[in-house]
Length: 235
Ligand code: UDP
Image 1 (cartoon, helix red, strand yellow):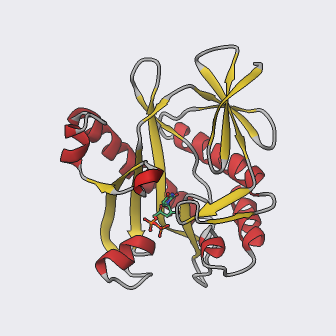
Image 2 (cartoon, protein in one colour):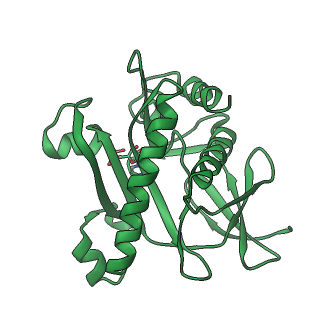
Image 3 (cartoon, rainbow, N blue to C red):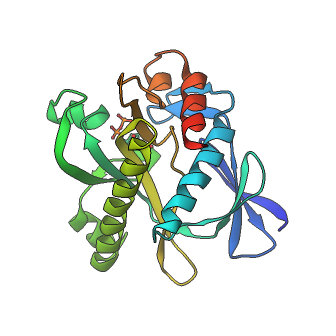
């Protein structure tokens, strides 16, 4: 399929039209941002890791009955995906307290949660991605009640599959963010990416951070952490 005009450039990816309106090509960059774009940098090789890792994980999820936008990996940094309209929500699942959850509720990072939690943020940089609840989402016509049920059920199912998958490669899945979109038939499918940019990964034995927190918090060995995660996933 032919790569045509660029439709969108985000912080970490570009999206291109193709000669078929039902498909897009995404291209992953090495650019890294944190704190809503305040901190900027480059993580060499990140685009390749995030592209390939997302694709491996999306294939695993598909094999377990989760519908995703994944179609075909085209190159180290490019993937053909189904065209969707992204629902402007960051869907966040947590297994262990960390990051903004720890701050907001005064809970120490690393405390295992009694049950996985689900929260939504409105994807809007100008507003700093505010938390949003189910009744707000319905009232603002971002998603219907029935769609929210589908989104929540999918998110918890994805968590169970990912948690197990990472446990098998010696990684604790602390939390993650996913995005979903509506396809041509208005079915809700998993889109965007699943990578060290969008998940917190801690080594199961040492609790060493193997994700973007190394960049956000200036912990060093950022590239190495991305490569280590890719090595474990790509076996
Ligand atoms: N996350 C993300 N994009 C965002 C915000 C969060 O991918 O814009 C991911 C983040 O990597 C972590 C999870 O969602 O795995 C929960 O993040 P949190 O709400 O704790 O925010 P943070 O502490 O990163 O600001």
